[in-house]
Image 1 (cartoon, rainbow, N blue to C red):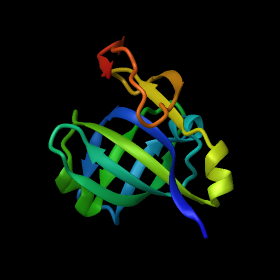
Image 2: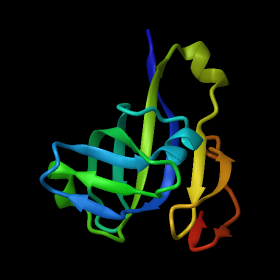
Image 3: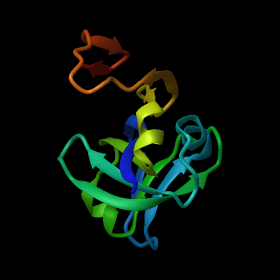
Length: 138
């Protein structure tokens, strides 16, 4: 038996573009993908902080340093340039693997520059409010 676990995320990326007529997916700067441990073509969930939309798609890597975050195809209807999104990757693990797993969380700044790598909190713990540039983590 395996369980689906939160593997990693890019927290509050800014959408830089939306391309309705591309085939599909989300294009993300390769440097950001690497920082989070998300592979090109990996299935991800995208959560739009501005409008609450949620979708599943796969990643396409853009040039390192481009800071691109582009929703493609039908997903382009779910976000506008400037929206903040969270990109979440999951992994199948045995319960034993899951016990020792720590998700990788990358916080980014206003221009999608990676600012900080943090450990995900244990369920039920309370963390003090911490401000990271324009990001409030509660």
